[in-house]
Image 1: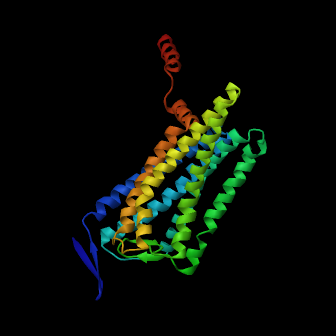
Image 2 (image 1 turned 120 degrees about the vertical axis):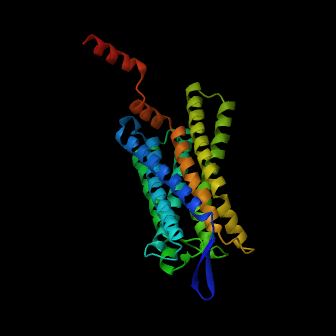
Image 3 (image 1 turned 135 degrees about the horizontal axis):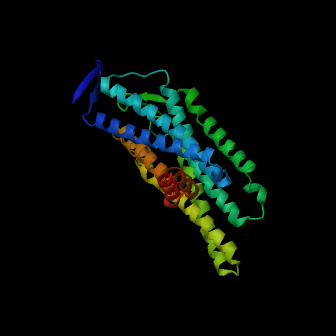
Length: 312
């Protein structure tokens, strides 16, 4: 354990676990960014992925790329300061904090849009306008605008501060309007809305099963319900991994929280980013099919090539 003196009244202590955690989280984020980028490129270039549901998945991948870059920039800043055992607040520190809140909100709302689209397909199948790419694109733009503008309050009022011990620029955790405001719009609202949509869709499909419903309609409804269930699984993972951050926010209202609360919280958040990208791929059948067609050629396609080579 080493320490660097900041001034006569403050000593910054560097724990032995700082660097290993910094490196591991940076690797997780970097792999997650690469996966999200690959998925987005396939969705963009493969015409079989040019559907409305894949438009929404592509939105999640794109904001996932940006969110990952922001998280990587935060972690790289922390890693460099920890390596040099230095206290340094660069010009972009507040901007990274703002972008973290903005991209987190947009990412969580992107999952809500996926769930809402499936709900409309089942409950309002005849309202085709709400299922069109134009309308869904409008919703995507609105969530992006909301995510970009709602944290402006923090950026221009100077509430985002440099936490020396955690080497990060964030809103200080304590009972305040800004903390409640941030937690509500970046996390609680989109997650709660996604779960509400899921519960309402489950209830509706159960009612369909009790009524005399054409088999093809019921089958389609169950398929859409399964897709919403997969979205809920993704959101549930985010809830589990973001739980330490949420717990620290709650505890900060009533007691003094641990010194390294941000470091601890972001270990879970950074790890969840990689797992969410992997599960997003696993749950998106058109994306899986597209990547398999590219990298895993069927044997019946390889055999004629081999035979032709032998004959020639």
